[in-house]
Amino acid sequence: MIQRPRRLRKNPIIREMVAETRLNKDMFIYPYFIVPGKKVKHAIDAMPGINHFSV
Image (cartoon, rainbow, N blue to C red; front, side):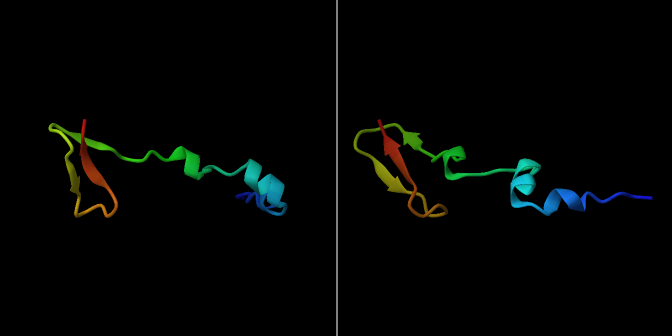
């Protein structure tokens, strides 16, 4: 017989404790794309709000 751990889902605190994946905004990395040149800022069409920058 297969046992299903429903008891782990009854309480929100227990549910959070046994969760496999936890994500929050601090876990993500903002992409920066660096290109050669001076004062270059070129928009990336496929990624709105993201640009190529020069150093």
